[in-house]
Structures are given as C-alpha cells and as structure tokens.
Image (cartoon, rainbow, N blue to C red):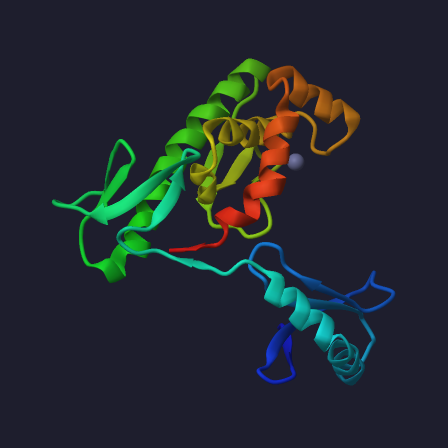
Length: 228
Ligand SMILES: [Zn+2]
C-alpha cells in the first residue's frame, strides 16, 4: 500500500516510500512527470515524514514551478515524429495518416490524444522491433518478446529471459536515438550491467552512441510533456 501526504495549500501530494536501506529522509521530484516522493527509513513515523516534507515546502514549490508545463494536443499543434515536427490536422477515413509534415487524425478533437497514442504505439513497435532484431543479429543474440509501454523512468529495459521493453514515446525522438536505445537494450542480453565491458560492446555495435545518449538526457523530459 502506498501512503500519500499532502503539504500546504494548494496541497502538494507527496508519496511515501519506505525503504529498509534508507538512513535518512530524501525528497525527490520525478523528472518525468513532476510527481513528488519522499523516501524514509523503514521505522520512521508518518508524523516525522510530514514534518520533514512541510519543512521543504518552499523548496518544493520553487522547483515544481520551474518545471515545463504539459502540452495539450489540438488540431494545429506540433508534435515531433522521428525527430521532425509534424502538424496535427483533421483527417478523413479511419486511420491516422502521415503526409510530409502533416499528420491527419480522423474523429473528434477530444479523441485526438487516444488516437495519436494508438498510432504512435504501432509506429514505435515497428521501429524498435526492426532495430532490436538488427542488433540482436549482429551480436548473435535472440530477442524473445518486445513490449511497448509508456514508462516514466526508463526508455527501455531487458530481462534475463531476453524480453525487451521500450517506451513508445521514443517514436518522437530521432531515428538514431531510437536505434541507440534498441542497441543499448540488446547489449544487455550479453552484459546485464553498465560496466566498462558493457559500454565497449555498445560502442562496437553503435559507434558514437554518446551523441544519442546525450540527446536523450537533454531532450527526454520534453517527450514526456505531451499529454495523449
Ligand atoms: Zn542499460
């Protein structure tokens, strides 16, 4: 069960995370969605947590205000697709169509978000599957299953069974960034860590990966601003 505190007025929700390893309180604002969490030692009381969080209210408000606002999508809005901006416009027929820098979305404007999400998910799956297969083949590895999700804290993951997961928001990033994330996860099929050996493997299959990695660090949060 998760416990949530509310600090100040208007209230800021703060999710409590008890941790056996935590030695002190630590307050964190998620880069991805701006949610606030407080990690506390297992035996600390809720009252102590409340007092700690209340003492940080000014800091919290200051940093929450600095966060970029969410982007609501409408016809006429601009969205990155494979790293290039496309403009959303009303569409005919049943499916979402991409023509040059225009993305035609049929249906009502209020359904724009869910429809786009569906379209982006399919496109992301296609791209990530092709890229993952390519790197798996290069490394003589096998990918079992690919899942596409809307994850907040990571762009991809890899299990020891060979299952890969990717965020569909990657389809908004440039193709090379998508390829890098695919290569990154496929390399984990061999090295389940981020050791120097692991990174030299990444360098081998994706020379110059540092550029794409930097791109994600600098622009990743931007991809999470869009509300679908
Ligand atoms: Zn990794």
